[in-house]
Image 1 (cartoon, one colour):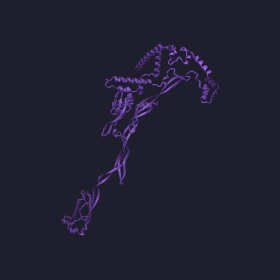
Image 2: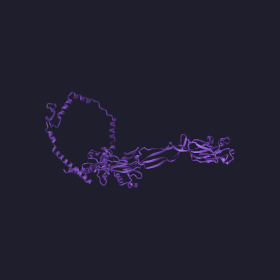
Image 3: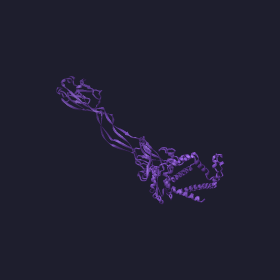
Image 4: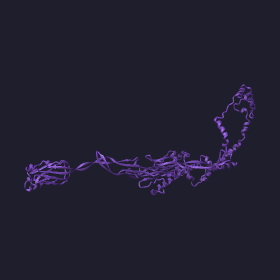
Length: 605
């Protein structure tokens, strides 16, 4: 179909050129020879500004004059007879000759050329010599790829202060009989004392001593001391007794004590008040009292150069092992413990993906010309567009005849022609216009658009899933089996260079944490549509493609198409499709064909 279309275009062009040539030839025949006939009949009076009384009329013999003998004779007579003429002749005769120096640079160079003429011209008298000629051609290709990136946040623990906690501590208090003011109360010897602290009694014990021999001989009258913690039986002259705990003391409530006999009869105050009895007892209490305890805190500080809420947490690793550390606060040593002293949280992690640049990166004839970062995070490029310049060679046969390069068969014409790919570019432009016309003709005329794309998306970072936005690896990476149909279709479209990357966004959040990210693309039906949209709409018209969340893949209006300069659009990505399965004629082949057709047309006349 492409060949038929091209042949039709060429034949139409040649037919039109042939009719113009015939018309020009007939006109040339009609005016041939009329110039001299027009001049032969012209008189001096027809010349603008002519004056018949001028001295020059003596030398003018009309339009048919063929020599200037009279004018030359008058000049010679004036040179020999006039004063001015004689002066000129004297100067010419008597002027000293000019001396030409052979050492002057231009003279010396000229003499050297003469002397070396044999060497310089050696071999130039031979017949034409066959040579190989070649020319390098640079073609620029645009592609996209993702560099290797790993971005993380760190959480580090340290001793950064502390706080007080409620606790208890144990203290020992002693109550001595000498501190109790005993008095006779209802026939008993009784007294009370305030405890020095408030708290719960953990344990209690007592020791005693007295002058037992001075007491009544009747054992019923042996002393008994009643305490809040139990009874102290003074059966011996001295001893110790275990008392009961559990009582809660208050420093505002007194403790009561009384001394009675064994049979619970009161003793007379005069007996126990006597210094001869020498009685004494001591009660020792261990009390648990409220207290405050200083507790040092493990404080965590985080270093994260990006917004975690927009990224997905991929992994957490302990990078400083846990254990105990000792810190000193106000001169007191404290022991701090942490299971880990530093964590590293990885949020963005991607391995290098050659994307659509793989074939150019592997080609030793291709070199990166420039790169543009499409998306970055804290100075790290996550996706870039690269332009590769790829060199190709054109070769041919030629003849060197003397100093001239002659291409006898036309095979080297495209080497001397700067537009090696001009035919490919012209066909690409025609194909673009044809595709635009087809799109517009199929619409209803209300909302006319050409090269309309479709917005698509894929999951890029999802905990527990593979990267379904990979540019490569489809069919070989087992992890991509979890990707859905749309994501697999995007992968295929990327490999065919049918997509334009728009951006990424957080597609799923919970409690302010990003759980899933997506990438948005505009996908087109053909490379031509993608090329025109990318280089025309975005590059020339300055119309963006929206956001990753809401890609704007609308087509171009007829007015926008008219504003595009197709000569500035690089169709190199389309050349492969253009040549795939088609034998493309070279520019020189087309030129030779046109020359042949023109020659045949001229011979018909």
